[in-house]
Amino acid sequence: MRKLKNMHVKLYDRKREFYDLAQSTDFDLLWFQLEHFHDNWLRPPNGVSYRIWANLLGEILAVNLELRATGQALLTDTLYEIMAEQENKS
Image (cartoon, rainbow, N blue to C red):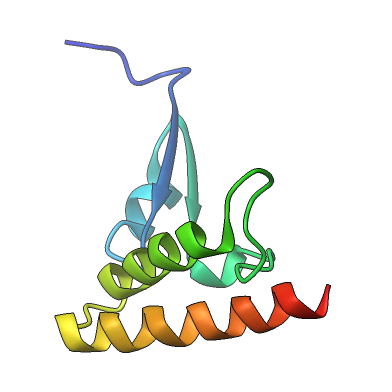
């Protein structure tokens, strides 16, 4: 059995199901929720086209929010339009 001490674990917990575990472990557990992110998600990472990023971000958010296929399509289309508008301004 692997030792859990000195182990580093990153955990994204959107439903707060692992909060107690994060508070009571003796190993390093980095626990965070969506509110802990302070990035501009509408800005694609360096070297990534906004077209590709809109699709990826739409899928990530749809899974996180448990959207159905039509909701994901609407979200992705909206993200694409917003990012295209920002791209044209710069």
